[in-house]
Length: 118
Length: 110
Image 1 (tube, rainbow over the protein chains, first blue to last red):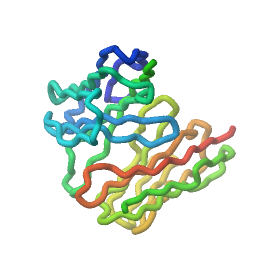
Image 2: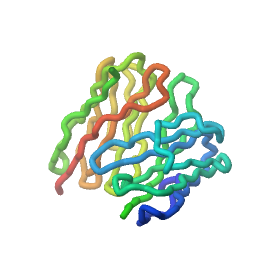
Image 3: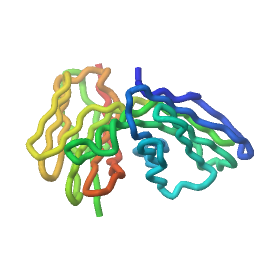
Image 4: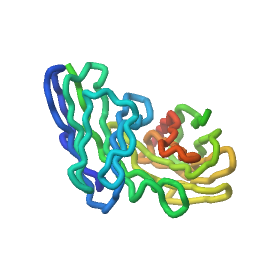
């Protein structure tokens, strides 16, 4: 079982709905990430939180709004999505954005939320 | 431009038939190379980190190696439960964004 928990596992929403994805980790990691993954493609970075502050926004449309209430929790608020936003949304965490070798410590992923926008 | 290429795109093996997956990279200043395994409908599962040429890591039937241009994931005597997509990702220079390959889809037949 993964140590990064994501809820819900599946979500179907209309284009006018507002919903939120939730992610929780209890590994003491200080960096948390949102990724989007389409079928047969690698994960695509959306946001990075480092020590609970947003450090990277990969030019994501404003209909996606991240939030990091504390070091263990990460939310992704969704509003007015388009059908092309349908994808697997993955949360990940890492011990620290950089480790003592100067490289990034590995990411630990949750099992994702399968989002369908109708 | 930094780039990561995985080959083959797909691989089908018989149980017990050993093989290798390749991840070649062209980046400026390798900081780390990561291997992940992903099962359908699940998130990627971390396997290995390699930092410098000559480094090797092992876990059960898997062994990862690194040179200055590529990494290999050797699978010895695979079992059907090793069937998955194997993803390679590289962190380079001061870029905090991982560069991902497209993955190798491995199927092991009993």
